[in-house]
Image (cartoon, rainbow, N blue to C red; front, top):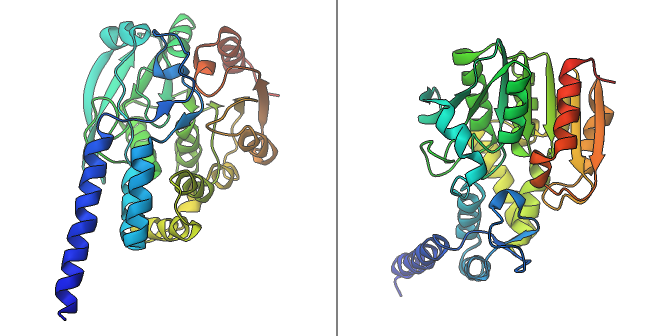
Length: 327
């Protein structure tokens, strides 16, 4: 029996299943469990997302055939954001903003940037996973009224930026390149992954006077485990996936965790988190509040992970924080 030939057939079989998974996922993004949501609801307000059954089935089949291939499959999904169409409420920002493609050294990708307004002070806005540079539009509009010009960008593999996959490391490099090109920024606002990336960026030299972080996550390792658990994969695959990222970036990927980065942050930070955030538990912001040197934590009720971005009371708190000292 030709063992090498058997293995080649085996690899082809796994590859075939993987290709089916990629094809099936093109029109099957993460879907909403609550099917009674109004038709005009856009993805900014979706809560409690789930992974399509086709992807769950594929992940389990690949894991059964080859744990190593299952690890690669999970890595690909983990780094592939979903591109949503721009909702109508963001269109005016996209139309009025000055747009420019910015090459980011070191990642071989270009990002779509947005300069919105003509104020004297500069604010940097950073969206979260599967978001867009216009996603924080309500916050941007409010900042414009206070004399700011806002700068934002579509993260790599998001919106109109190049690439099909991305990660936290690339987001940090984008933020630092934004500062180099358009800064310095007086204040910054981040959402979800964008909050984590801002903390890491400050640790690596981003110079801002104040930050507001909304719905931040925390430990990279926990996020990886949560993802592989939701795929129905063995915990060992999550462990190996984390090790592969360590090797790829030549560092412990946990060094990008929010709580670790927070130890090096000495500026005032406003933390905002909803108690019913099912995408990023409020415990992450509670932990950050205990680590940051100068911080204030505001917990909301019933706004979830995305609706919080457009809440009038939340925006009022952000503006007040930027006007005065925290605490």
